[in-house]
Image 1 (spheres, helix red, strand yellow):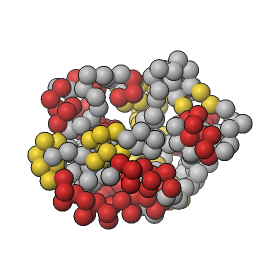
Image 2 (image 1 turned 135 degrees about the vertical axis):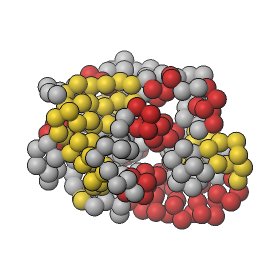
Image 3 (image 1 turned 180 degrees about the vertical axis):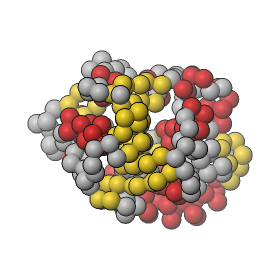
Length: 261
């Protein structure tokens, strides 16, 4: 199973991948029935989750029902317990929408929900995050997770996100972080996909964020937050929901984002 998942991740374009996996899981999840782990998003429980990873497979990572990963389940709990996301009326832009969230977000009557992506079949609007077709201060909430490591011009992408965010609005900007790196690493001369995978972890990654991630996000007019929400969750719940390695919590498991001043 690990080798099969890794093959799909590395060789099938993202715009098709989620659709293929979604239908494949209808069969696979039958073999994972049980009650040792639970997904807080879809509320389904299994004997374990599936492995997942482009280069190194993480055990117990992928929910076979809604396709959530550790970061998605953690973010769902964060939104429920630390924000008014599920109750207050908001205009919400979801960039590169994760399939595990879409149908649940669409059901929320308090949200005016828009999905956007460069090529995803789930997108309402097709766009490049470096030049978005929205007027200034259009959205109360913007979610752009695991996006910033892909963009060519990081500065332009952040400027655009903050431009269309309303004052007092929140942008959730979770990215993969290598907490052993003091500074973010990128090299624009590396263009070969295999070399990018070697240096940045994936063929379509252009950088590896380090301990300076919060500083990287900072721009005039916004306040960056690094929320250690996971440290407030009971160890047994971290294990039950498979949110992270319960004995090794660090900045890679924190929630990052910006609030517009």
